[in-house]
Amino acid sequence: MLKYTGRLYSDSAPHFRENDMLAASTIELEKRLMKPIDVADGRQGMLVRVYDDRIVFERWDFEDMSVLGPDWVLPLNKKGEKPFSFDSRAIVSKAPEFAPDAKLIATIKSVKRKNTVVKALEVVIPPVERNGERVFDYEIEIIGSNGETDRKYVIAEGFNRSRNSLKANSPTVLLVALDALKTAGNLNIKVFARNSFNKKGKSIQITSSH
Image (cartoon, rainbow, N blue to C red):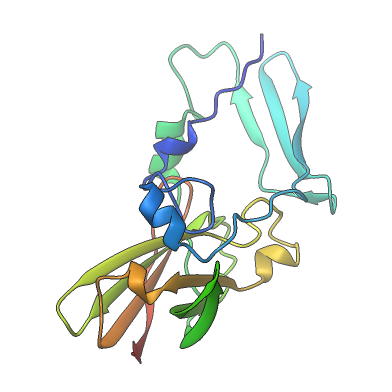
């Protein structure tokens, strides 16, 4: 018998991101500037091969016929072993890392929100270095000279595609209205790349002001 064994979306903290459909509150949702990320081009699946002593799962992106990662080889007849449980995979997973020369771009711009124009912070995040770990989302820590701190999260562009796809190697953009932030003044912006187990690598940062 085969069944879906994935975690719930809410298992990946936080429970909401700037470019998904969920929000902490109606008030926050009304302040958002970003649209939900497009996942309509995702065409992933598995080719399963069953042997006497193992089951082999080949993971494919059928949109560009790329392999998503090494095969999962599930041994049979070995009691108690769960090499591909989420806990086991989380332990051995590695945080995605930016390339050593990766740089952020941060600007303050005017953006239309409904029938008004608001000031917004835009942060352009470069794709992570392809070290064998897939990036799921980015954690953005914004520290203001007024002593306040904000944390925002965005799902990574191309998170649902193969590493070789154009989208997975494209920048991800955070766009957040200044009135949705507690921070003000000079802003120290740090960005961490995270995998789907909430492991994050070293940050890259930039300073902006408004």
